Image: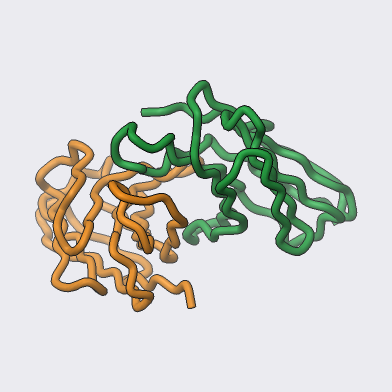
Length: 116
Length: 114
């Protein structure tokens, strides 16, 4: 089983709203990732959690706040977003963390976010 | 970040034809991954390659890890309509260069004409 689940599938929010994206994996993977993908572009890395600790933040604005409650769950809290933040937000996980090993990353289906 | 050049950018082919696409970099990579992404969905892992020269198949798909470790190739044989989508290569740098993040190619958009 290589399934990563994400909720919600679609989200529309205003610039003053607070919302959260959720991601879950039950593969026992040690690393979890958030990516942002704009139309017709490859995914761009935002955050990496390794053993439930934030290990990489790719200079993401503070209006995006990640959280890893446990080894299976990853959240992305959103606050005061801008219309240009509208994108497909992808969660991924991998057995090995990016500092100590190579390996495959498995992606969830994504959350299509629209900021109005 | 690292730039992976993927070509072609787009392809229009007839059903039943074979497809070839490639990914090149100026850096040495330790891992090459190939993904397929349907509109509005997340990328799905097709093939993972870990050794220079490695040739791996997954059904009608075959991918190769280039000998120089700076490139990779994906072939699809006897294309069918459900092969439509965007194909991304992704690589992880040589060990010792820091976090082994995935660097993505720019994608190849495949259209199959029935």
